[in-house]
Image (cartoon, rainbow, N blue to C red; front, top):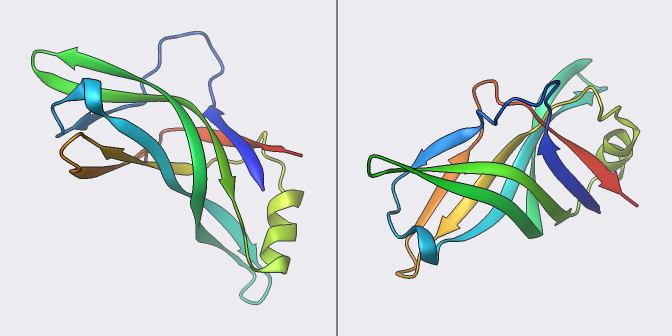
Length: 133
């Protein structure tokens, strides 16, 4: 399955979806979307449950801001390729109204020394996705 992940914004204000990062070599960073979390309705429990989806392949658009020696990464959008193995869950995923749903993306950052850092855009950051057929 392929999708595009992007910010949910109602205005044209600058992005506030940024995260501090510990890796300091911004020029050598490789940035991938490692996973995302969304709410899936479980018919057995009659409740919504968080489901994490691992991303197989991604193309991430991002910016790095340097503010007084502190680096921040801003996720603008990402194209993602993933699979949902459970057919019922996959069907519910495809039936969602993604204009009203949100997801929590996690980026994997790797620098030239192969150090890794994971950045999760949680805490009210609004991202959604569009399924690409």
